[in-house]
Length: 182
Image 1 (cartoon, one colour):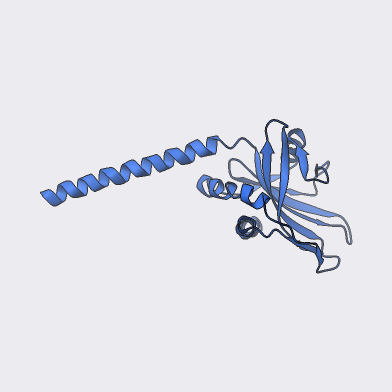
Image 2: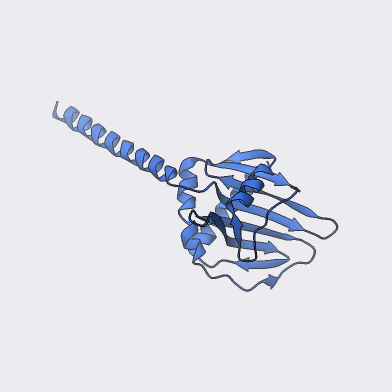
């Protein structure tokens, strides 16, 4: 009888901790006050204009685009206004895949650390291959702007973000990109 009570007590403790963990995840997801978290983009102007990619929104939708009209790239500092980002969301054509909320939250939490990483100097690696780039976004609600954080760029000119967080995010986003092509 004693082992039964111990087992029952253990089950109650485990269920309490499990419930708390889920509540924290839901609360943290509600604190994400930005609509777009990540982006992959491919641009190539050799032998015609090619522009495709995807955005990941705060619900985990991976929203694809291919040659969108009136795309907003933001300024030279990587700043894009909230209204410009909304325009980009409207220019997406489909939901390619989804990311779970738990995975999205764990990855979103790495963007701040990635923003502190040093960027390598651009290195010319290819010719006429175009550029593929992976980004995270940090939203400033006071200014209503997104700051684009370069995680990695490959292709004609390679640029590496040296932070551990950027490297982890790049590998994850590369897997997401592979899922969009299936």
